[in-house]
Length: 455
Ligand code: NAD
Image 1 (spheres, protein in one colour):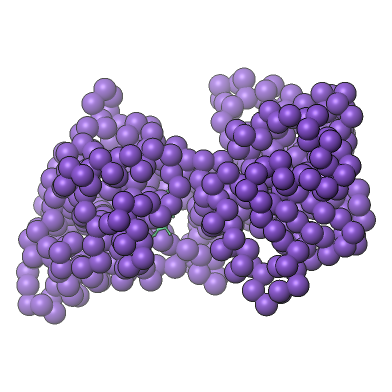
Image 2 (image 1 turned 60 degrees about the vertical axis):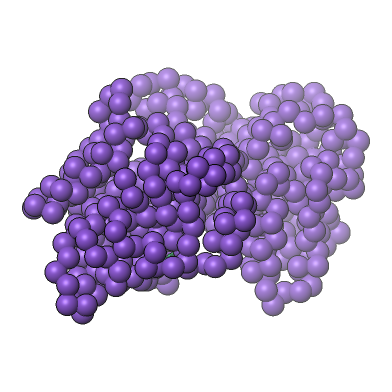
């Protein structure tokens, strides 16, 4: 099939590469000239394991191309995916300007029946607005070209995106109940057939329910995290170990083990913004989602938990302290720094006068960009933040090590060497990577989340 993907980000590029890999002719369109240049010259603008190989293979085979030319990208295509960003607007609602700009562009260029696939995470009712934006442009051209807008939310996880796209748990598709909608449904079936062989994974539903499903999924996952974080803070106070509690409740199949880890708060490009957007949708309908209100505020507080522990240990004035930070990305396997907890913790330490030395296995470039933006107008604080290329250089002469992301490379470090390099053997672990008793035996003062020290 001839397919176009609008937006070459984490979702768009993975979708494009995977669809090309099963034989489709895929054109990637983006308004970011630099991104397209990088892709055309054989580079990849994001970090996603396995993506580089698939892109290179399909580009070489002539099945994957990149362009900033909308005419080339959008005429004579059977399906056009919209996979542009939907960041939070000022009031927390999803900012649809990129989605609607993409829709108008589609309307200016389609010539034959086209299935327009909304893959961006968008509030209920957006497909209707996309349809109107396309129809307006099509009408201005005096055409009567048919199209259908379907909702196909994406559930991939950064860091495991290829696996998630090619072996999905489910493929949610919302179609209209009319003739173009029926045609679109058949197109979607053909397009996803390679990922739907061994068992039925496609879930067809109405468009509004499909749009809602994505928010419901992310809101549920964020709820589990905030729930565990809140219990972790209590566990610490009452002398219980949240890791033991996690195993104890996860073994119940009604609860399950996934997404039960306590930590220093959730971040990333989806959970925070999608929870906010769903709350805002409720407000628009005169409603309040009380649970999600709590999920969001518990998460904001959780990003401060490590800072509170550090201040309790070193005092509020940290101007004599140097802290080493392991991990900056919001989770392992990605270079995504959007709403990463590390940004909150590092900013809080700098604000109290500390020096911070940081390392991340893949997110250094993105991190430098993110902190430059966060610390714009604060050159003095920015000068106290530095980055090193080797994880052990982070701890040289530091008063404590802070673990922010559970990268594999941090899971089993050489503790003797760590101790020898740190000015004081103190570790603040936001991801519960180490055993408190083992750390005590090693002579390391160890603070983690939801576990009594030396438990
Ligand atoms: P991203 O910011 O990485 O990429 C978006 C891309 O769209 C950018 O390259 C940008 O230049 C491009 N773009 C913006 N406006 C454009 C336009 N008018 N025409 C063409 N290109 C345009 O975003 P992302 O993380 O891939 O997310 C995309 C959507 O998918 C969002 O709605 C997000 O919520 C959703 N989503 C993301 C993930 C994830 O893990 N990142 C997972 C599931 C769903």
